[in-house]
Amino acid sequence: MNSLKTNRLYLRELADKDAPELFTIWSTPAVTKFMNIIPLTDVTQAEDIIQMFAQLSKEKKGNRYSIFLAETGDLIGTCGFNQLDADNDRGEIGYELGEPYWGHGYMKEALMKLLEVGFASFALNRIEAKVEPENSASIGLLEKIGFQNEGLLRQYEKAKGRYIDLYLFSLLKEEWA
Image (cartoon, rainbow, N blue to C red; front, side, top):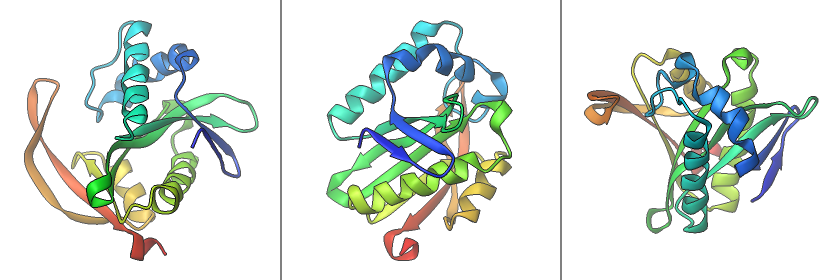
């Protein structure tokens, strides 16, 4: 799956040439607030993240797409599978959007295409997302596209030097169909 299209978006697997634009997004504190990274300070950090996802893709353990506006070609964010578990037909999604593009329905559109790929092309049975309880925008988005909140994972991850709680959301293939 190298590229995907929606009405307003074009999704392409992350590429090294995306690093400068992704650095701009990933260095914005408002964007990285609920990510498990601190705001980037150098473009080489974006290059490293791109390489990490390229390795996951090569191993068929994950993948990530850059999201572009079809009309302008602007790179506005990323989405993809942080983890793919072929033994259990399960995947975990992650996503973020540059701040100027919040509130326009772009991520909903991108995630609907990602779910289609997950259930159809990757033959997943279950797609998960983990979200910090304070991230109301992400929680609202997941609920809007049919994910169920399965509960609170207490002090589940260590992020930015502290243990954080996460909600576990999921969507089953039978619920998607």
